[in-house]
Length: 169
Length: 187
Image 1 (cartoon, helix red, strand yellow):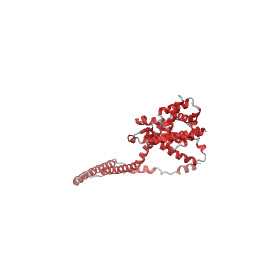
Image 2 (tube, chains in turn brown, purple; image 1 turned 180 degrees about the horizontal axis):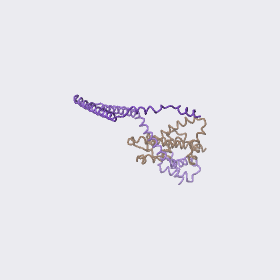
Image 3 (cartoon, chains in turn purple, orange; image 1 turned 135 degrees about the vertical axis):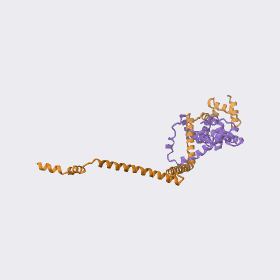
Image 4 (cartoon, chains in turn green, purple; image 1 turned 120 degrees about the vertical axis):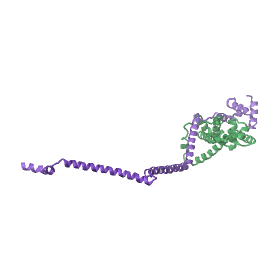
């Protein structure tokens, strides 16, 4: 790897992109694979880097789109698979205890609440709550208006508030 | 942090009016503070945030990525070769045909030199040929004279040829059964 821009701007985004991919596919191996694919695609298109205005936003969009595609094919594969419990044991070699803990918690209440958000709300929520990005940055990353970011976040937070209050009762 | 402050921040939070730093303040409180019972229901939300902010890729991710990039670049080179494969084939055929053609041409030129005319003037060629044949004729004549001289010297020796002939007659002709027959007679 020799491109300076790749090391300076793109590679430091790896963990953020991984978390975004994970929030969509909820599988660490798959999320890692998505980030790698995004980086590989970017590397192969190095002659186009100068035409990309906001590289960070471009990476977020690419990761989100690829993760959504992957999730579609994953859900299709899961419905086709006869013995999913056998498949789940194949790619878990490097899954750390932390991921195991997190992934076993995906059935807990908060995950079930988040699952009820729309895709757009989930992504906005992820970028704001987990990555601490400003509304402007989120708008650029998702190629939507700042107003739409605010509306999506407002709906997401209030939906979660409502769902968490319901569970309490 | 006072309850009034928390309530105010939470109200701002639900209305999306908090700054990033205020949201961090709320997160700190819900994860590590003394959360009142009526706010306990929001704890999972802030725990989720806390857990997911520290999620990271494996340490060997960059190594794996580097290996994948190298692999992809090798494949790219292979694809380039594949694209140019028909041209390479054509070029190889042209070089082969040109090579064979040139070889045949130079070989033919070398052969022509062996049979090439060395004389432009037919008169000179006849003269050279005549002189060569003359040399040959003189050589043959010299040899003939030498032979005749040798025969003459033999005649001058006054040998008795009949005696020499009788010597050859005394030697019995080769008979393989001769020895066997004499041995059986002795027995």
